[in-house]
Image 1 (tube, rainbow, N blue to C red):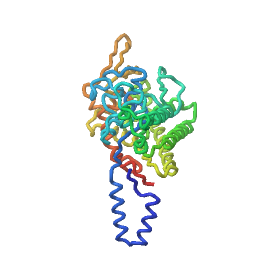
Image 2: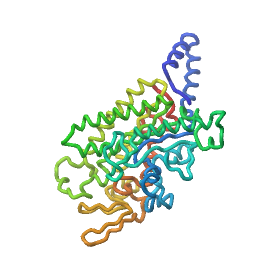
Image 3: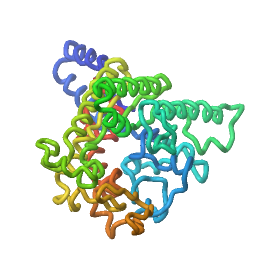
Image 4: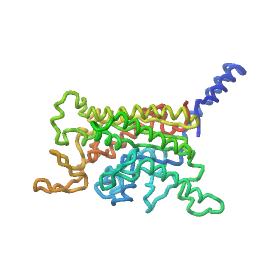
Length: 397
């Protein structure tokens, strides 16, 4: 892993200036610049998150993957909440690695180049509801526990006394410290905060969420993680199902300031922004605490909001439109389902051309939107520090 300027490097710079003069210093700086532009050559990804990056966990645990989910790229159910690939799939492709298998998917999987622990409906905070109530047992805390168990158990395959053919399916012990650890979680936590408004202090709730997230990152660090790629939460007030147009409360659009210029719900997005600010502040604190680690904060909110703001210019239809599902007059029949409403059976299917839509099912993005977003974040344009993901192992503090 290539590291950029550190405290040690600064000391070397000063010594070079005093001992060798400006020419030697210029040569040294040139060498450092060349090193800092070299890729990290990641061989392994460990991902943690919710349905925005779940590649089969919930499908393996609770229900079979089925069409129309997966129809665009996989041509069959692939355990993803989209018509095709997710942002994490495009990240893996960008790094020259295969798509990640879900940790609990036991059929036809290989974990040589990493594992995906993300699971739909997951949160950072612990939940008090089951899968049947819309919850998930795989909170971030559980996902981190799964990682720790994975690292411990697979390490045994590489001990001389236990060497076996199983080793070719798992990362080598030395790969764990050289891997990139990616995060995309928090959206469901914010949905929970919104549901508790007026009952509990949202500011306190958000602070608690961020604090628990920080503890989980620290746990990974103590188990050898060194490179963290952390997505903040997106503009959930722009998701079609968050907008009054798809709900019964259309009268809310008449309230001044309820919607922004793009038709997004201001209050919801403001809460997401508060979460993101506190998350970024926590990442900065962690950088100061862990000098030999790289923590990249990725502004997914801005990247996704840019897409919603420029949908037509980017070749998409009205961003409030939903490709798969029925959502009218307060009735909701979700993608792939059917329901009788006022004596009429509603059977949902996908739109004719998902590539023209941002929203797949009202909550999740289409493959086309996921690719649009991924293309804009991997080069570092929305990162702090502004490093492309291929160079995210560099330590800049």
